[in-house]
Image (cartoon, rainbow, N blue to C red):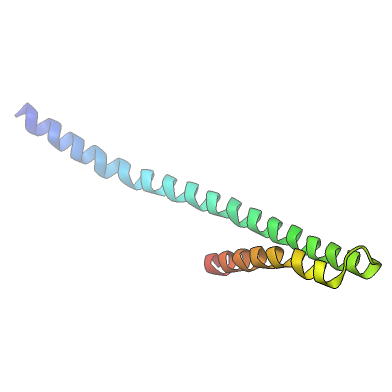
Length: 90
């Protein structure tokens, strides 16, 4: 008889606790994803500023057009990846 009571108590406890556990886990995941989104937006902004600086350097004669294209390829690739991640999360 006591064995059955213990099993019922455990099942009852799980039924009561599980929704709160699930809610807390979901809130934590949403906060984490929100932080990641903010990081992606900041990184995107910095990469756009880097592109702007490269263009300014080319206009002032510090870089040739070929050097600008070479340097901007990786930045543009990273921007495309970030834009894809941002559009996927929205």
